[in-house]
Structure formats: C-alpha cells, structure tokens
Image (cartoon, rainbow, N blue to C red; front, side, top):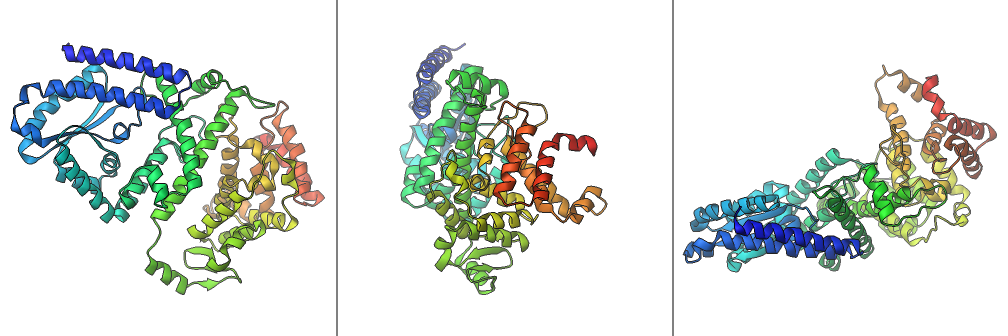
Length: 547
C-alpha cells in the first residue's frame, strides 16, 4: 500500500472518531457535517497533491480544476458518505487529466472513500446537465478544491446563466426525477421503515428546494432563497429545524453501522429512541414518541417542497388569462375552469379563514372532479396556520360549529378526491379540529406484521382504497356493492377512525368503539348511524373473516 494511502486511511479513522465524539456530545448535525467535510477535503487534497507530483512543471496542469459537488460540494456530509468529485479540464489538458484521475480514484478507493468521479470539459459539464437532472442537481452545489480558479469561475458563471435560461425544462426534469425516486423509496412520508435521505419528506426534498432555487435564481443557499421570496420564512424555519433533526439522525445511522446506511429500520428506531433519551408518555412508547417527532419533521419538509413545486410549475400569465376568461362561476366566490377550481382573489383571504367555506370548496372540488388551484390552497394554508390551534386542548371541541361539521359530512359523502382532501385536512391539522382524537394517531407506529404505514397514513389509505371502488370494473363484485350504498359517508367515516383506539393499553377495538360514540355525538349523527359507526369500529377486525 502506498504511503499516501496509509496516511489517508489513518486521517479518516481519526477524523471519524473525532466526529463521533462531537455527535455523541450533542453537537448539532450541521457542525458535525462541516467537520466531516473538512476531513474529506484534507484526504482528497492529500491524494490530489500526490497524484500531480510528477506534473508540477507541466503547463497543461493549469487547465485542470478539481471540483467537489453534490453532498461533498455543499458540505452536507455523513460519516460514510461517498465523495463526488469532477475534474474540469480544458481541451488541451484532457489527456493529462485522465492520467491524474486514474491515480486519484484508485487512491480514494484504497483509503476507504467511494468516489463518484468524472472528467468533463466546461462545455460537456453544462450540456450534460440540461438533459440529466442528476448531473445538474449535483453541479448546482459545486466548489473548487484545487487547480485553476479562473477556469472554474468561467464554467460556473456559464452554468448559472444556462440554468436560469432553461428553468422550466430543468424544473420539469428535477420534479419528475424526484417522483421516480419516491416511487422506489416510498410515496408516503409515513413508512414504518423510512429512508431518511430518499423517502418522501427526507433530506432529498430539502435538497430539491435548493436545486429548484438554483434553476430559477442561480442560488442554492436557503437563506438567500428566502430573501428572494422563493421560500416563505415560516417554511424556511421549519425546514431548517427538520434538517437539523434529519442530518443528526443520518449521522447516528452511519456511526451505528459503520457504513453508508440511510434506512431507519425497527431495530434502529428502538435503539436510537433509548440512546437519545426519549421517555414516552401515557400509552405511547419511547420509540413511538421518537418516530412521531421524525414524522412531524418530514411533514414540514413535505409542506415546503409541495408549495415550492407548485410555484415553480406555475403557468404562464397567458395560460392563466385564458383559463380565467373561459371559467364559469359556481357561486358568488368560487370559479371553475376545465381543470381547476378557485376562489376569487378579492375574497380569497377572508374565504380561507372560514372553515365551513373551505370544506364546502372541497366538496365542490370533489363533485366536479377539479383540483383546487395553488393560490387558493396556499391562502387556506396560511390562514389555518395563523389560527393557533392547540391539539392537546379541549377547546378544539368547541371551536368547530355545526356548519363546519355538516360540511365535513357532506365532504365524506363524495368519493371523488376524498382521500386527497382528507390528507390535506390532516396535514393542516383541520381534521384534528373535527375529530380531536385523530391527533393521537399522527405518526403513530404499528408494531405488527400486517402494516407498513403509521396509523394515520394507514387509515387514510383505507379510505382511498374504498373510494377507488367507485371507478373499478363492473365485474368487481365489491365495486358493485360499494356503488349501490346510500350511506357511503358512514363507511368512509368508519374507515377513517377504525384504528383510532390504538396507542392505548386497552384493546384498540374497545377503545375505538367508545371514541366512535363521542365522534358520532360531536358530528350530530342519528342514533341509528351512531350505532352502526360504533359497531363497524368495534368489529373491524372480524370483517375480513366474515367476508
């Protein structure tokens, strides 16, 4: 083994040990990441200096720039991260670059760092980025490690200008690539074995905000994107908090396994909850308390990236004008086009503060199978955030009037878009105002072999599965029975709360029946409907046996 490789292996071992001490002492994750980035810088530069030793007098060396990019570039390192490095080479220096690159990549591999390495001319780096979202996203956060500052600055200036000119195309590519990644690692945030980097709401979505910001403004720094109005200050605060939690959690997984490990499996959940001092509370285990905090953080990230995505994909003023011109009025406040439904701008803010009106809008969206447009939904979100709702307070029961409960029951009766509407109500904590007991289900784990989602996500998925029967094949017997039902709303409500008794020491079916009785009373159901709701919740485990 070469002496330089031995030195680098020793540097890595000592540096990781120092990082672990910092991590174990409670040092914020961002500071540990910076320390690890400094360590990787030292190792890469040590190997680089050794690789160029024989060519120090070669004039072609001046045409090379060693560039860190991706997580390495933004200094967002975990203990066993790989190192994304690009050798930027002008034409006359390419042959020399390939020779040096061979030495550098062998050195990195031999000392224990998995290198993501490429050699490109400035023109190649730019042109490949416009078609490949992985290359583009990685290069948005590049920085010079060694070599020609002049050539690197020329490249990055050209790269930034080209990105802004192609922002719509790049936005589409980035969002589609992220959708494909989510399909692989989990469409919902509430997986019981999430990937803290790639699952929905994870670190990758925070990175996506940065990449989209670069495509639109040439900036990937979140602080600057707030100043540019690209990211709302409240979302920024929540995203920063989530990042701190998630990056520390990723460090913990790496240190525990001594490898690049991003999947938070059940064994790790139990161990980390104990190590981090979670104590739990009545009916909630320490691991459940830990995972509820995890799910709360990724929910905030999902919120932020959802609205950034919508803003970035906003239609042109011409298309918006055509849509408004061709729209028809459903009532005094609500308009509808071929694709969307929205509230007139003049009354949007006051409309958004009224829970009955918001629920009625969702009913109309379902009845007409239209999507609530982004500006309207954003106004609703802001208005509901401003209403200081304490989920642990009994006042939530008196904060919802009869008009709101009637609109909620009407919403439950319309299968179209129901699951999507309920998820939005849950995300905004409106669902917990209508059914306060639902708050306990938020991010609650299920330790058995039959579920892969948290209790709340599982319950919403149950509603979705039922509503999909409305469009199922006529040959599907269950679909025919579903379509003949007069009281679909009652089935949807029962599915929504069928596991609401979980998280207590007593049998969840028995607890659920008692809660169902309170829900029925709060929603003003008739005695017959209340009895049916209670029975469905009590007997839901027997339904599949009877069927």
